[in-house]
Length: 493
Figure 1 (cartoon, rainbow, N blue to C red):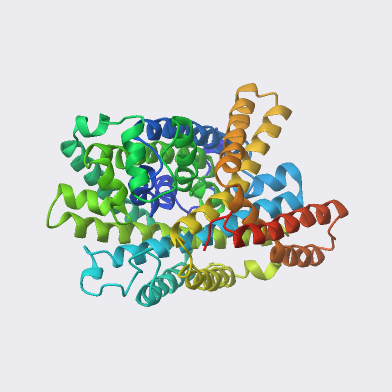
Figure 2 (figure 1 turned 60 degrees about the vertical axis):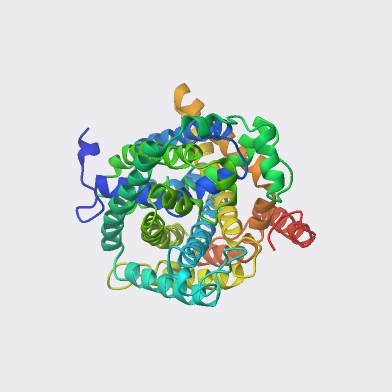
């Protein structure tokens, strides 16, 4: 018990700061885009079923992370569990996937900011087409300029000191959670049970609406609708491991697990309320036809004259808060990997504020490049969040696998079941909904191997034949994704 009460880092992040990091890391663009994204693929009944499945899947993951955080407080969080359980190269695969995921998520945040700025309830009414392309919502020239300024402003803030940025992030969390609660309260008072239940399971009427909207066929069976929801819902839980990744910065490592579980409960309440209740506010055909993000249209309907503008600026604040978290997380991940000998030591170089400056600058440059590339994608936001999701699932799956291994070694049957169910959910979820993007993610490991080899040499070790063999498989899978993308099987451009 004495160890649990020990203050590991007196100047670190406290319990509510850790909860704030989990919630704020997750709540970004996703919660505001959910209404429109789910309406295009699922009925309210199927969406509720999908939430139950995702909620249980992430509950098992959160319980696994909480258990490992309590039993292995000496480990460096979720990214390090792969190395603890399966060796150095597994640690690199997990850590590099997390690193890729975090800054790819920043591209999604940037795209959402451009979409909102370009909406008719924000600056798009004064400068039509300047911030985003009307047909796709992708960043236009003005949008690229503005979100690039935001990118480097956030990078500068974190370079000045991670703990101070974490405090600011907790403040932003309060603002955006309050905004979402206001939205939910309005939807409760505007809720029409008849509208909500008109076609609860997405049968003929709803399928006809989808076909009329010009998409590829109807919603299909309930099982198909649920499957289509999974990848979208998994995206909004990215950040659930935020407290674990920042374990070295916590005042008490023993609080990481409880902070993660409390954060998950808060998230589920907010997500379900914000994404399902709008089905009872607007007719389905209006939800499908609403510009992205559909939350703006819904709130303007409930509060004519000011609702659209209010929620637009709230989205921008919310996304910037999450963007701040995702600026910290990849830098911390790279720093930890360098400390473990999985990346060159230069990736952990610190400035006077104890921030990993080189890692932050690398993330900033790569995000900038992909923001520009995303401007030419068919749907930049969907592409960015899909890539972000499948790459972080690699890290989650390794953490769940380590939970299984650790529990088996210590004869903890209940914990083993939690880890196994979390692992099954992550693997099956991605293979059913995002296998194409997973192949594309393999391309990201090709340059990463150079840094892993260099790190191993710095530590007087070499890459084994087995590790080269795994790298060869990843390279082949990545190369296969190129022609699949070119012919449109993997939808990108």
